[in-house]
Image (tube, rainbow, N blue to C red; front, side):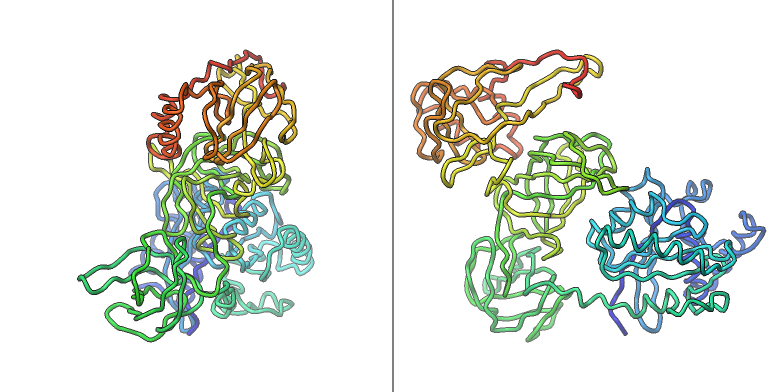
Length: 566
């Protein structure tokens, strides 16, 4: 028997997702007798003139049955002679895109239904793009309702051309296109006599045979979930192996400490084993003490590293907007850590793939953003190591999940390449938003920042000390605490860019990288401020800012009818 397959069904509203899974369960005799009888009785009061309505097996909420649409994600578990399955039936309506993304985040394969009468729709493209974003590598495009078009091969070929274009646009990998009828059962569990021109296999046969274990990742890694200390003589590190395999005696590296040790023993449940592999939950004992706690990663044969800065693709799921400089808890691997979205690079039109400049994301939009964490953690690009490249943002007040996403690049803020840097000298770089303008929109009663194009400044450059909403003195110092860089400005020119630890207070005004005055007037106060600033991004962030920063010293807010067209 092949291993467990987790898959998702998605597509536009009324494409037949729930009907498809319900019919597979019914035809495969995977229902208890009382379930089958209840389905037959419920169907008699439905909309199919007494014929069995297979969608009722999955649309469990009363609101779903009343509206005839799926709202929540419904999970079903079943096993055939060849494989075990977990299926997530997800909503098709655009309003419930975030529900659909939750289902996609767990799946290895996506079945995307396409109505044979309508072809590829915008919602089809949306769901394919989100499934790709969530890391799904195996796709089945199920061209449904073939019975309503007379099982036309010509119409199927037209839709296949549309799907092929979408596959090429999104660079999808393993793709199967199957004509079927979820209502009538054509090509669901067995080949249909109504579609003799189709030479491929039935849907269930493909699901039973598709190989997902070939999606290997480099090396071995295990994110540590728990440190086990049942007595003074045993210290084990528990977690699930996400890739590769290990054996007793292997040398592993613990990240982020980079300490090396040998595996003394491997325990699976209550048994000691010589080896363990991907997917197994294990307890690993090492031959010496190493600095490892929850959130650390045990590795072998990988190039995994640590970083504080990430470039991520996010699906925004919160009712409130995402704007830069908002703080969240970031869950990545087994690590939960404070972080801040420092920049929204662009949003992606989920229907066309077009990149559009923006300074905010609203619910169900996808954007590429830069994220800064409060400390370095083990992470990697999603395409290289899935578990260390997928994350969620959690609202620090409500504890609700605000976004899910994947890591596209590492260290964008560490290296501070290209347009990210405001100041640069030799190997030092620092971001800064001191040249952003603040506008108050009289129409919407909102305050917004606007970043205007500016060069990257270095030693000797003259900087613009006056804008519409800011006016700095000719002599001042900039402390970019998050990048650990200090910039001294004299006579409106950059005199020096140096590491923050080398900076000494010289009696000139001090501002932070946002242009806010720092209330420092002595070397002693500087030391206390730098100590307190380590809390930025953690629970004390607002208290530290209120204690040390003043907005109105060098900045003001300009009234404007509409800041979007400035």
